[in-house]
Image (cartoon, rainbow, N blue to C red):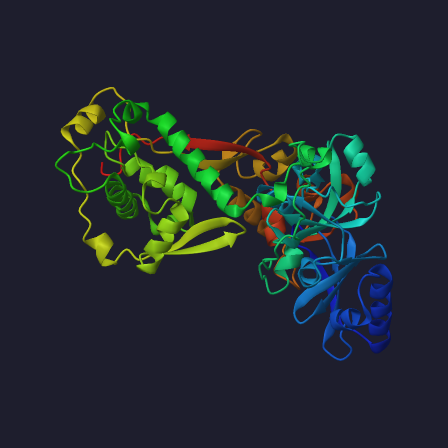
Length: 483
């Protein structure tokens, strides 16, 4: 509902009578809240505002804002908590669990499908169709979405966990969340689970526990380890020549005269690839950069010919621990921009370790490989999104000389839309951030049932609605980092 920008109709301070009514409504809708908790959620004297707005599809929504954060919203006389409220009261609603990768889809406005659910050992919460529910991610009980059950728990199990499970109304990182202080979900540990009931002599656990699996024991460390293994596996597949020439553990040439252990040699190789990647491959415009991208797209490609980078054979064991060490040396700054996903947000390219690093000359063997017909160190292609003009938008783009199927870059699409709005005097005279929708724009950006309800749109909503038919331009690199 709040995947796109909404339009605010009014913002007023709540009256005393409305405050008392809201408190009574909260107590009725959420009976698990005690009197003190209701008074805490709807304070008696602190500032509380009523914001009336229209969602991008035209739905009229009333939002209650306290302390700068939306705490509740009302749609069709039904009251719903926001994620800000659920972070303070995580057990307010029946909570279902999904995987972190699903969050991106929920933020984009998708509903939660049953195959995305994680079934805990205790089973799914018992709900009926239409019940209000919360959605959390594996490893953290802090809810990240609010929705309505599309079927009962019994129906979910009977369907084999297939089909639409929940109609999502609001999620972390959507525009309603952005209207608050934009804080991240707190870390709330999963509820402690009783150990499986092992029957002495039987050697097995209860059938339902064995079927559902102890998914709550999946930790972020395990996910990170699997991700690093996947990155390394893919890079090995893309560089079979290096694997064939690998004479020993980790792809290191064991030198009898070298007093360093294999682990120390791998540490040196890891730091060399890291520094070379920062000096040769990573640019300021690439930041923030996923740590997995740094490893898979840059560090592996900087590994010398005939050697294989294997973090597990280093003293660090994990990429995150190595990057923490580099952060302590103030070479980089790492942040967790979303749950369980770390990115490099800053690099000190003037750091002595980077400035003093000498890029190794490629060996004669690798030079021969580059000049010959054999494979080169892998560089991922650059993928650039493009936009194709669909038939429904031909009238909008034809004034700029574009036909159906014309391929445009994002900046070109924006220019066409902006010029069209200005040329046809569609910019709202009272609010320059709004654009009046003429019949052509209505056909381009609105569904049929919206065309009589929505008369204006903010610029960002209008521009994000154009060019829905996408294509991609793929550019391949044929040179190594030092080339």
